[in-house]
Image (cartoon, rainbow, N blue to C red; front, side):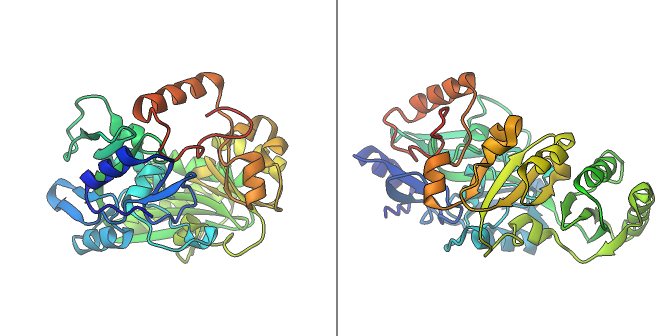
Length: 367
C-alpha cells in the first residue's frame, strides 16, 4: 500500500504510477477500484476550525471521530450526518472525512440540511496527471470560479485524490424528539412523511423502518415540546404518534441489515415512486429521506435492476458477493449522454486512467 504523508507525496505517487491505483482513505466503504492501494490516511489533522464562522478545514485522511470530537467540544456537528457502513460491509479501518466527501455520503439529516456536497466549501486534490488543484474557499460566501469541489463530491476518487476539504458545520441542537407512527405500509408512510416535511415544523429526519414511520424534530429545549405537539396533531390522519427512542444512528448506518445474509441495494427515487418500487423489489426494505432513498435486502445473486423495470437505473449494489458484483456491476449503466460526459471528465482529469479504474463502470455499459 502507498501511504503518503503530504500532498506532494500524493502527486509523486500518481506521476510515478505505472499501473492502476485503488484510491481510498480507511477503505471502509468497499468502493476502491482495482490496482495498488493509495491511502490518504496519512494526510490527517484539522487545519482550521473557526466556530464563529461555522467552518472547518481538515486534511482528507482525518478520521470522523477526530472531526466529530473537535466539533462537539464547540457545540457543533457536521451538517450532513455521514453514515458509518463498516457493520453492513464487514470492513475495518477508520472512516475518514475525505472518504465521506468523495462518496457524497449523507445520512438522515439530508432532508433538512442537504448532502455532503452541499456542505463542501472548497477542497484540494491531485488529479491523474499529478497536478495539485485548489478550488473553492474556506468561508461560506466564496462562490467564485468553476465549482470543481462539488464535482469531486461523489466522484469516488475517479477524477482526483482529495487531500483537504473545507466544510460548513452547524450548531448542535439542545434537544431532539422522535415521533413514531406504528403499523403503516409504505404508501401510507410516505404520505405521512411527505406531509410532515412540507410543514413548517422542520423535521430533520423522515424514515420508514419495520412498519413504523419515524420523524425527528430538533431545536431548543423550550420550544421543542410545542413543535412536536404540532407535528403529532398534523399526523393524526395516519394514527396516534408516540415518542420513541432515538433510532437514527441505526437507520443512518443500516445496522438492521448488518451481519445478515443477502445483497444490499440502494435506490434513489421520488418519494411518490417508493411504494411501487418496493413492491417490485420484494425483500426487506427501509426508506429514508422521506422516501427518496430506499435500502433493500434481497437474496444473494438477485438481479434487482431487472426486477425493478423502469426503476432499475436508480439501483446501486452496495453489498454483494464478488460473483454478483462482477456480473451486475456496482453502479447501473448511465444514459448515453451522461456516459459521454463522464468519459470526457475522466479524460480531462485522469487521462492515463490510473485513479480507481473500473469503479464506476458497469457490465451493462455506461460509465
